[in-house]
Image (cartoon, rainbow, N blue to C red; front, side):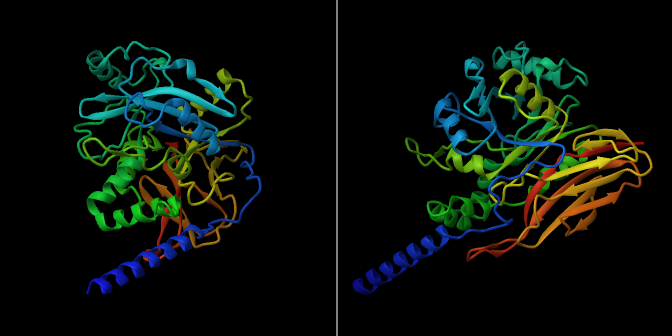
Length: 405
């Protein structure tokens, strides 16, 4: 009996090891490889990550190590947002080789968490007690001073941190994708699948996280709802800390910063190149973010650089995503993919939260016949290794176009 059990154990062990080696070599090629991905015509695409914790708060590593992880991942910029850390190390702001680093913050507010980007006025960042009072005032201002920065609601449906009541007019945006919340949901609702993800993570971290990713339906519905009341930015947030508690005194560094930096990013679209001058480049990136000139994507599926969506008027003027403009005759929305995917794909155009069009073309162009809030999603259908098989996975989400009456 013991020999039989031992033989079964060896069979399972070596079977899993062989499966892992196969998984390690699974390419999951979504679009053809390019030596140098091209910028979209008329724009420059720069990718980065926000919502990152260092050892100063919830993370496992010092900022210098996180910067190195960002450099190794090929990021153009990243935002460090430590929780309730008011003495921010602003001396680390700026370029680190080719990587532009922003030192901002994430703050407790009531039962929720607010990410605060591009801050120059520090009046509201003098301690938790005062912050509650000042943040209440700022969030109820429609036109506050730009110095207070951009306020983003983090993980709006994470248990224990959910917003209650009306969403204030001073809220600029919300996280549509929060990677930590996604894998926590997988643990709560698909525990066996999550444990399988942990087992295969050392062999192929990319596939391990892709298999548990689900379209953030609740967050997208909230985004669509808020966007119809006022412009609302949508973000992907890493919520990266590379730390999981596995007991009272034991922690795992999982997932790694590099894995999360490569999984999902925001892509800002600029009219001119970054120059390497920190002050000017900071303004370019933060201005693009404030105006919604960016999309977010699962870069782990494929590098989307070269993607674009824009509205063109009859006079030839081009308006990037996030733009707000009055309706006029002959407005056209154009969506361009970097290349034709090697797997089934769909380009979806939504108006006021309802799907208006589905296309399977590399370039899609439609006439806009009336005012509304328009945004674009792209999804692909790769074949994941067993036991998962083929399924639709969102690849790209644009910020909306606001076409007014």
